[in-house]
Amino acid sequence: MNNLKQQSKLKSVLVFGAKDHIGSVVTAYIHNKAPDVKLRVATHKKENLPILSAMFPYAEAVYADFFDLESLSAAVVGMEGIFQISPDVFQEDDLVDNMTEACRLAGTVKHIIRILGMPPGACFSLIPEELKAYKYYPAMQHLVAKERYEGSRLPVTFVNVAGYYMDDFIRMFSPPLFQEKTIRIAYDKRLAWIDHVDVAEVSAELLLHESTGYKGTLIDLTGQDLCKISEVAEIFSDVLGTQVFYDGDETHFYQAIKPVFTQLWGSDAPEYFMKYFKWETEHDHLFKLTPHVRCILGRDPKSFKDWINENRGLFTQVWQENKVA
Image 1: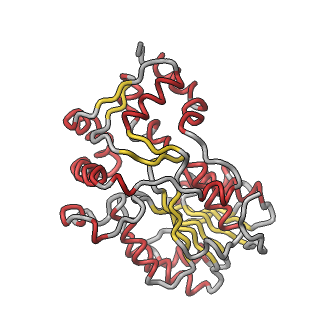
Image 2: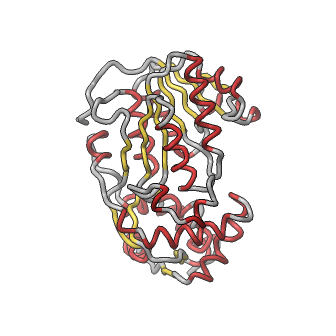
Image 3: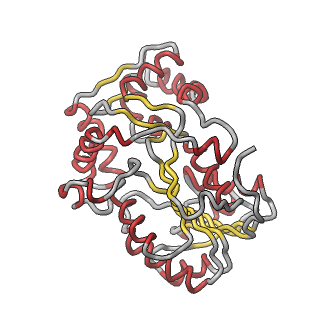
């Protein structure tokens, strides 16, 4: 049993980002655990409405643009709970201002879960000026959102991903791993690692069962692994029974991320991430394991070994297709 106080759950929940990564798991989890909760799923692209309706036939799919108060207000109206996650490289101050006004107009919102992604304890006073210039980039944008939400008086609980997602290795860090069995990330920093499913299920539970111990706080969420990136390569090797190499060369790393990060976030992204990763390495003492997954879900978070084992077939298939020995 988890230790959340079993109060009456919210009657309705609006999920932003329901088509992707975290939001899709949040939506499915809430429906499975509490099918009587009215679910509304939002997208900022009208062409995605049929996709959302097909993915979640039990939910109402709506269009909502964070920068268009009319559509945002229409999505929020009548909702008691909101799950809010932002795309990377996003104008968070405008988003929060519009969310504040939409919630004020609705008059029904009781709890908002906002996903953050930054080292635990990070604040602007720790950030050098050269990084502050990238105000809307990952990590920086979450500091902006946190400050703005805290000044909004909205009933917000921050779920901070206080580490890196394990599935970054099948997303933004995947090319060298898929093509060369090599983890190529500069600066061999010690990080906490977490499964995105654990993040989603914690967020859903906090919406379903309001807890006086968590509501309105910032929760630093981690899994059970705290290790250097070179040690991650060793875990991959041990679990999969094949040598996975680590390459921390800065030039190699920049060359590896440049095409991927430019495509994802624009031409300034590679330079920003090189500066940010260096700063983060200098502050890797901030990363610590936390017990919140167990406290909220009543089970241990997924381990890195278990995550790799679950994805064993994917790595084997990709390496066979790429003829990687």
